[in-house]
Length: 138
Image (tube, rainbow, N blue to C red; front, side):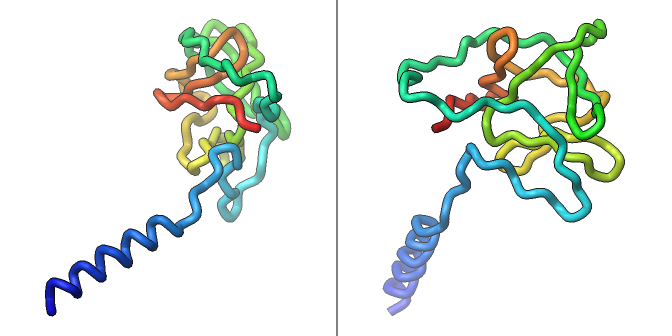
């Protein structure tokens, strides 16, 4: 009798995992209480012609982020501005007195005035953040 109880429990757990909705990686994480959304440039939806997409694989030089009104801006460590476009689903917010960039899963990947590393892409468009590749999203 105990054996069937264990099997039933395993089957029920597998069904729960299979039926749990997965987060769409193109959807920004919800804002927590007390946070305000900031403008962050992100990639537009993919076109039907992007079927042979590949992340360029070039490491983007480290940058710093700052808040500029209701948006975030970036500059290289030498002070030159850079116009970065983040993968769709990333967002920016103002929370507890500082700006943050948030991945679609809700993790904070960058904060204002901190050095941001681990970005890969071409001269402007980011396609990989901290080892995770974000392909175009339709």
